[in-house]
Image (cartoon, rainbow, N blue to C red; front, side, top):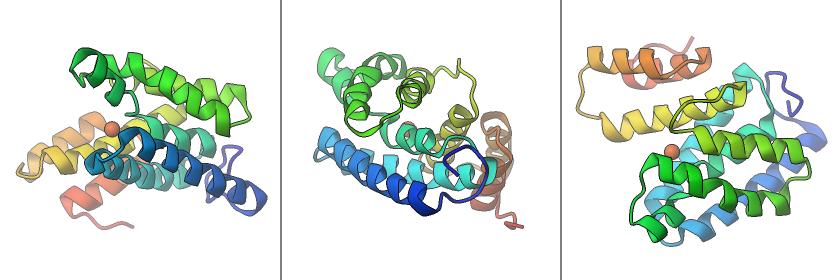
Length: 182
Ligand SMILES: [Fe+2]
């Protein structure tokens, strides 16, 4: 629910979520332009973040917006410094995300929460349920992209170290360790 309980967001709240999600995806696509790899990454992180949220709860709008926009600072970081380093994205992301969110989200506290998540998603120095959901979803996607050739023991160690939510661990163990989704 939008108010933080586990489960899918239904009814009017779900309809509002669907509209905002579509608008934020359009904005993200516009910033990334022809970069299909980054668009696909954001959409994959969104899918996992919403799955984790459905089990773990938290603010659904914050989780959704943070997932779509978490890497939005890459373009400015590359333009200004010629680098997509994590700490540069964390500096450049919030202003870009803030101008987008200001158009589509009504709740200033939710906007600030999304910006805080974006500003810390590489360094990990932040603590909220929504933050851990975004970090876990990003890790699940990145493990697949970056560790395809690794053995089971190594994958298990990385999952254990980098993924903190129960649902994130369950999804990662299913996807990378072939454990059943029970
Ligand atoms: Fe990411």
